Length: 442
Image (cartoon, helix red, strand yellow):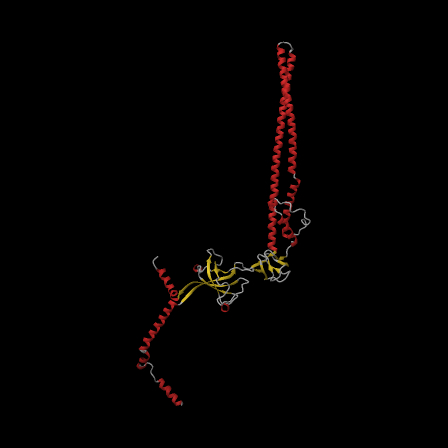
């Protein structure tokens, strides 16, 4: 056997691979292989081109999506850091819009804040309603924390205005001036009567002087009596001028008193207006301060619905500003839709009416299917991460697998917008189209 193996190995070594016979067999393939091989390759290429003209490959723009509704769940976020001193509602309870759910620890007394809020609501300075806050027993001993300083300003303005109304200084002063005017009028009337008497006396003296003048010319009376009669006339005229001066002086005093009344009324209106404006401004600032305190330290239900705890489990728990503490799910969510944030790249291809498939994070699409929708609108304004868009969901939260999703909260996921459903052949020729147009005449 070993001899036969040695003989075969010797024979194979004696074969000349470069002989003409071997080269002819290996160098020239059969013609039928070449002919049918080329035909087969051509058929395969033709099938690929024909298939690419019929098979479509959609162009997709992906964007983050949130499925929400007309009445989405309300999230209550902490606006301050501290301990939760009171929780008034239990997990799963029904709350009404405006209910106080919890309080964050602060220097103010909640009862005093509510008491003051009730007083402030009943006090309406715009309508001249200044008597609703009277000497309350608790008015001076309220523990208000951050609101205290603004309350002190309001309390001072209110006290000053009440004192101004109570004293009624200007009205009393006006009545006193009016009384003076009345007395001056009486005095003026007496002066007027005195002037009339002086006028009559002067007329009589003039008649006597006329008679004395005739007698003096007839030398019946001496010059001394004539001069005395003339002096009497002058004295009566002087008395009449004095009466007239007193009348004018009294009339001037009366007008001054009338002007004083006008000035007093102007001063009254000006002071009343200033005190009222100070009161209204301090009232508005107090209302703003109370509102800011409530927004900071009170966790108030922004809507009605079922309350759900998020990052809260007990009283005296430490929370930080920005923590999401509670969620309120409304009973009626309304119509369902999706909000997209289209990326800047490719956003121009998204148009209303295009089909959208949404793959949800909480529901794997291979198990639950996808939510289908239609692009309803695309905003012309942009955000930091892209353009907002609204997608209507004809089937609501029903997936393509006919699975009804739990919609107690907003659902997040990735939306795939089918912008163009073009064939593979068109996609193949798009680069050639670009090259032809870019090298064409400009």
